Amino acid sequence: MPMREEFLATTERIIDADPDVAVVLADISAAQLAGAAQRHPDRVINVGIREQLLVSTGAGLALAGLRPIVHTFPSFLVERAFEQIKLDFSHQDVGGVLVSWGASYDMPTAGRTHQSPADVALIDSLPDWTVHVPGHPAEARRLLLESIPGDGRVYLRLSAQENASAHLGVGFTRLREGSRGVVVAVGPVLDRVLRATAGLDVTVLYASTIRPFDGARLRAAVLDAAPDVVLVEPYLAGTSAHCVADALSEVPHRVKALGVRRDVEIRSYGDIADHDLAHGLDAGSLGMSIRDFLGAGR
Image 1 (spheres, rainbow, N blue to C red):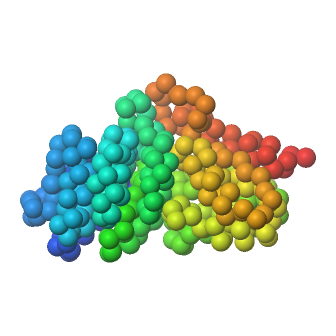
Image 2 (image 1 turned 90 degrees about the horizontal axis):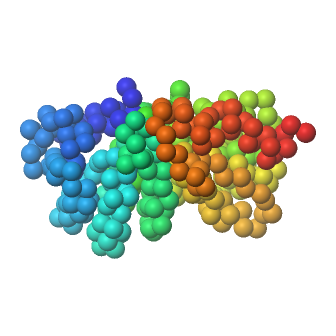
Image 3 (image 1 turned 135 degrees about the vertical axis):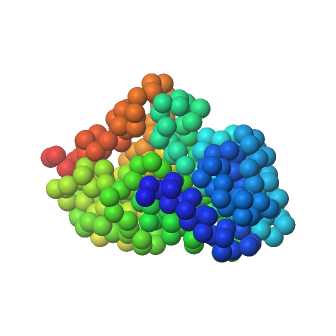
């Protein structure tokens, strides 16, 4: 089943099995979890379209000893309620699992109000957050289940875009070996990166968890290849560039960051493929960018 449906089905099973877990909703997905809400009305809470209250309620449940799953679209969960994430979760040092669906532009017909390419960069401005960006429903399910135990702060970013196969390794998984450079693919851009790099002599690394950043495996890959890194992320371009710089601080290197463009706002509607093309995140555009940067055509 698609990533969002896998999340909802898994969440319902978690609620039924674990009395210490609560779910907080802002109308989004309330219909799908109506059965769980009937069985556990004290632990499935719909606050309506009040996203700041959504996040604060989740933090309050954490202070009361529960493990909250807080869910809505990323533009409302992270951008609109960022102050509450910063103060109610981070500043109070409580944990929870924030789960978004909609990614950067999964709902293009809904317009800019439902687009959030900067969500991971915002979360990254706060300390001690784990950030999962699964590229397949099986990855989403495993990462959600792994996020429930403990009291850490987790952001799980779900997308309508998915890869054909799951990769369940921890940190960076090396999917191809090459000598001309290292291409890092995060979450649902992997299949496009694999198509873009077909026939190129490059190493391809994949991650569904981008914070903490697996600097050790990136260094190892760079030392086995050339010190040129192409970072492909399905959100704001360059979000993880500072992590690459830190990981390679003692290795002379070059970095090309690809992702949602920072230099222009795309105001058209269209479909997901149109936005991929506009941001250079389709396989053809990625291939040209990677070849130009690595000099693979020479």
